[in-house]
Image (cartoon, rainbow, N blue to C red):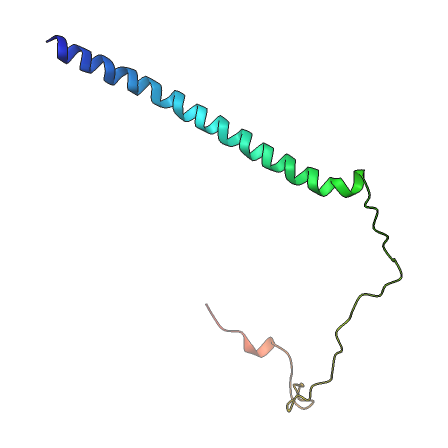
Length: 93
């Protein structure tokens, strides 16, 4: 009987520890996420806080794509004769 009561007691203790372990894991994950975000923001703000010593030329033009005309063998247009409205095209529901 003593073995059974100790088994039940240990089971109850484990059941009480599970939510505590879950909270510790969630808090640890949140701290890791915030640390990662702080590192990313620090890297992005590093150039603003301490500008680099490499000179940059603001007069350099950005490369652009050279576009060419493409011949399309068909065109779309409305017929000039006839009724081009949607009034006669109503369908009952």
